[in-house]
Image (cartoon, rainbow, N blue to C red):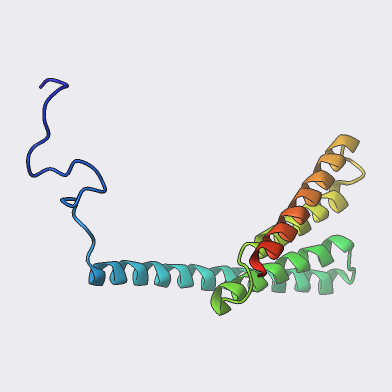
Length: 146
């Protein structure tokens, strides 16, 4: 076959070509519904895993009879994950804010846990990452308001 051959008359020339097969309305509804079922199933799985991890953490604190700052920050992470799931279900608020809060809390927890052993420049880099995430959260919140 040569490189300069013409496409077959029945073959679509591009994605925007009217001859390109389209997904029907019923088929599209079925596909989107399937994705929603998978999404909800995964959200329920994440919620169950988060609640069991939080329960295990609380149990560990009860057994050790000692609460550290790292334990509190970890509980905030669990709370923010549950909050993110609630935002997905209720549709209230921006779903992009909670992952940013989770990342900020995770970085703060990392600084707290490894602060004394970390190189000072790494702490500065992580603090800069927290600042960047905080700025991103402010931009997203302000962009969503009229």
